Image (cartoon, rainbow, N blue to C red):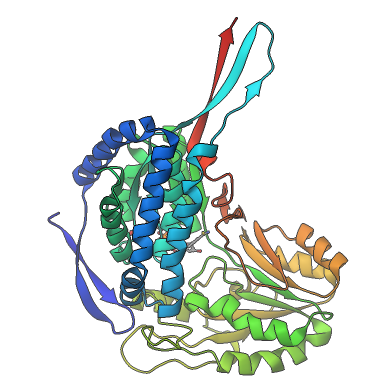
Length: 451
Ligand code: TAP
């Protein structure tokens, strides 16, 4: 590749290395290699694909530390989180290694013959990934797609390609055929758009902002190709007066400041029942103050820098005119640092409805259960959310009322590779992960045999 892009370490603001920027011809060449590799991959017996994916998982497991160190440098993720992310990729591969042998169709009763359905792979799947969780989000697309018999072309975000490139090499080390898993670095407007427009890419998985997601979906509609969209979020952390307040306040910082708030599932609104609002803020302040922000290579660090200088300016812009209640600490000096920040917001404020994608949380009071649901739904998004209450009936009613794809009660967990993940409203279309994901990378063919 002749054109290049300079990668920057977000914790030092220093250059790391140059990365190639593919043009349309280079993207087309990768897609052509994938088309060829897919034919023999799909022709393998299911156990052959299962074994190959298990081998890939094993090689990733052997390189967890290396992948984690790359993510620390390229994305500024704390080393503990980065190790979890690399291990997660191996687990996702292992989980979907079980799929080829379970992709059964149906036998449907008909008169005059036998009717069966067959799950056939699309062919080549394009996976477009953002910079916030480069490895994990890529694996949610490529592992089930490969398991179902597809080839994959993966476009990492231009800011964070290092782990994706290494995963491409590890796939070859594990024995996956050349061309089956192509990693194409370059800009979204060139490489990503080519995945959308190229006739041989038969399905697209896009994770990123809602505005780009809408364009990607429109482009896929023009080509009549299916698309899965994982988009933005403005998730609510709803704390009722009957909750274990100490536990809810202790857990709240991690729910929004993990990955410096650059998390689509960040609980970036804390909605607190008015009768316990003051008490909750008293408990939250020391928990935010204790949140450890600093060198991502330090084993004790809980939060690293933001991804870039321009993203830091965007996050800062959200604080114009905001009522900042208290803030945590952040290092001085180079690097794109930003302290964890708690804002007291009013309904309708921009900070209470728009995605910040940084370590800023808006706290709002609510009156009762119906008000909590109304407020939680007062955003275009519907990705994740948490409900803190000791009342089981309330937990059920509120989790039914909140329009989000992924909710948790008395916890902030959002991602388990064996349960479905995805958003409602402007947060997305379709679901990833869970037991059905491999099937989403197939088309159903119906065959009738006359007797
Ligand atoms: P985007 O700017 O939307 O970029 C996401 C990916 O799309 C990048 O690889 C980007 O490439 C590529 N892209 C940009 N323009 C494109 C186009 N016209 N056609 C095809 N691809 C294009 O998002 P981001 O800033 O990287 O990520 C932040 C957003 O992603 C947030 O809104 C966040 O909530 C969302 N997100 C959602 C989830 C889930 S699972 N719902 C997970 C993580 C992030 P380049 O940047 O390299 O040009």
